[in-house]
Amino acid sequence: MTRVALLLSLLLAVSPSAYSAELPDTGVSGVYEVIIGVDAAGPSIDYFAEFGFRVVDEASLSAEEAQSLYAVDSRATVYRLQNGSIDAHGLLRIIEWESPLGPGVGFAPPETVGVRMAVMRTEDIVRLADVFGDLREQAGEPWLLAGPVYDDLYDATAGNPTISNRRVGVREMGVYGQDFNHVFFQRYGYTIPGYGTIGDHSPLRTSEFTHHDFFVSGDLDEVTAYYSDVLGFKSEGETVIDGEWQPGPKAVFQMGPGRSHWYRGFVSPNNICGKLKFFSVDGLHEVDDRSHRQRPGELGITLHSVWTPNLSMVHELAREHDIEVTDVARNEFGEESFVLSGPDGATWQVIGRDEAAKPATLEFKLVPVAN
Image 1 (cartoon, rainbow, N blue to C red):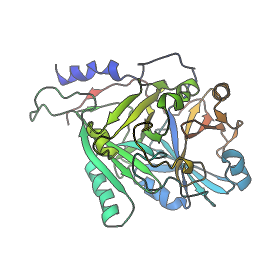
Image 2 (image 1 turned 30 degrees about the horizontal axis):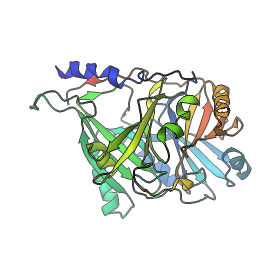
Image 3 (image 1 turned 180 degrees about the vertical axis):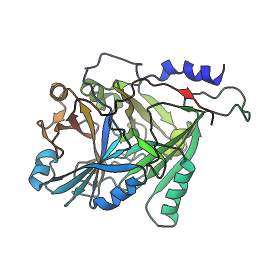
């Protein structure tokens, strides 16, 4: 079978239309923003500019407004950042708290409960490994590099390798820091249109955030059920066990011999990007649990958002499923929204929005490329 035929044959297996159990038609966007708390926004804005993000909106909150929206008694200045023209998913919001509630999850081993990772595509993962290696070794900054490692995610490499029949797959790397955790991936032999868009505006040749990883505690089927029941995400399949026998998880999560964890993924019916990936070691191993430090108002990644044209519907679904929600109110950008706190420990702002300026890609399509 040729590489083209093999890649095309995989489409049905990896399409987000799989496992399409009855879902509420919420119109949910996929993950819209990753939201981080900082005590000084300037360095963070400069940092993310190197990855192609620019400020597209700015707002301020009084202590009273922040208390009402996020249960944080602190004034704040808030910045929304976007990578290129992609505005349906993959944005960043930075909240500069005048009086943060605490340090957040902080610099932690990858499998720590409460750790969250934002994933982006790159054109040069070796360059990023050099950059973060220098920050760690030369500048003395707290960065933990895990990888890069190569993996053929779709078993798409056909036959024996030759100079013209090259292997197909990705090289990925985890980079864990004090206030932010990255996962980078670079594709070889194929691309997926609309899944990670890289423009000349990005000095480090990186895309918007394509998906998001969460380490949580508890039974994944139970604590993540609301992503389908309330938010309308499709499960990508049954909950399975990942382990150190797999090259990607072994390297990116620094899994020692005999280590494993439960995995479950979700994708929006309305966007191939903005995917969610959840990991739990519940019943398998003892791990450090810092989930109490991932609340809004702490530093680091403490919140995410989605948008939907059916805000009232999602709010009512949350109440029907006994998910903790605030009343609908205007957020700092004047958007109708509410905050949802899930049994997995994650906090979400659900935003009312009719459409994106640049429509999301709906078809998951593997396209062979010669690299």
